[in-house]
Amino acid sequence: MDFLTMTIGKQKNIALIAHDSKKHEMIDWCQEHKEILKGHFLCGTGTTARMITEATGLPVKGYNSGPLGGDQQIGAKIVEGRVDFVVFFSDPLTAQPHDPDVKALLRIAQVYDIPIANNKATADFLITSRFMNEEYEHKIINFHQNIAERARTL
Image (cartoon, rainbow, N blue to C red; front, side, top):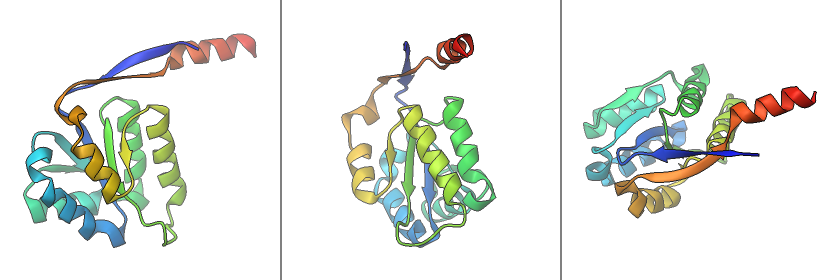
């Protein structure tokens, strides 16, 4: 299977998502890394985006809340190449009514080989990586070729 080389630019498109019990942790994390984050384009699910903007002054483009399709909107932006880094503080101890949406978002991030942090420690490692200040090339499956090949063999 052939691969395509994709480039994540110097200015990252970062999605910020947090389950309800993790929203204050996300706000604290954003405040702690505000100087780095202000150099990037930020977006997030509804309530999280609004809360981050109010608390930190960082401009965060808000989509719908997670249970109302926000996770899916961010997944679509990954597919379009308009989100290339995800920080998602999820709560592993609380059942989420939109868990299938969360799993779909995590899956699409994996398929498109983009960095995704599910907790503060991973987010700290990623945000302080040397790759935050430079372009990063990564390979993804050539989906057009993959689809054509599958259609040919069916």
